[in-house]
Image 1 (cartoon, rainbow, N blue to C red):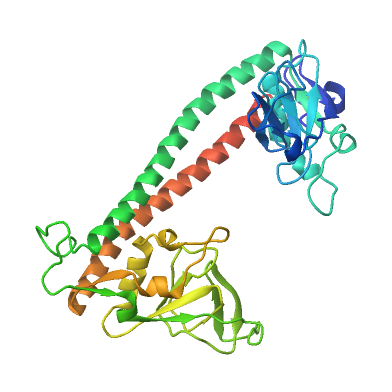
Image 2: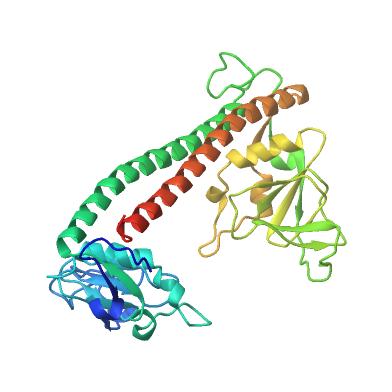
Length: 365
């Protein structure tokens, strides 16, 4: 704890400045989602009810689970469940928004002593030391934080908008590629360029269903074992050759993978192995731009049938032009990927700046 405090700042414990009580249990069966009052739990708003516990807004802290330690300010006339603590404090000495931000800086989930899911209690958080300035200073700090965060949030919003625009751009590149517009000038919408065919996926590739990996799995195996979300083991045998596209059969059905080595695919993933009519990398880009979710007929876990994939229409340019299309796609997507990397880095820097602002605010700087 910093011993060089500004004038009138004090070192306190959380137990000195707050008292916490549990909210009241409210099972889903007892809720009324048509009610007019909000229900809050450890992760914020969780539903509605026709009754409320608190007339005024209240500061609450998540008590258990992945949202343990998260703090929120409720709306007036709300219900708080027993997954959250309700915080009481002297509002003549402590500003509510200051306390909200202070709790956020403390990362209370780190004080969980549970070996199962995170849980915090009065006994674990009351002894935590904090630095408390006078009320007027607290309010000035809150005002400055909100000013800085407003500018930061606007920048983050712009970055996320740019991310979405890049996603749209990528899909536009892929759409144009398979309409012939990247390699043919003045092509009319809906028309195939000269020399192109429209076939079914079954005409240009074999779809290899995966198999259970339990009998072949070996940590020292030569070949990776792939599901629709990536590698999760190795095997001594393989099903698909290198440069094959993977499509999820169940679960993650809309995120194609391109695998450059021989591999074993599990029974929830299809391997699309091309014949001599199609370039394997171009098939991957076709799948990347295709919305497989529209083929999902399940009512629970997203699923694809082999026959549905086989029946997908696919445009087949001459092989030489296929290679040119790949070059055009990769040239454009490479630029987009570099921009995406820059945006991700900027978002990380923004989050680091947010934490830096809070750290300085609550250390007297």
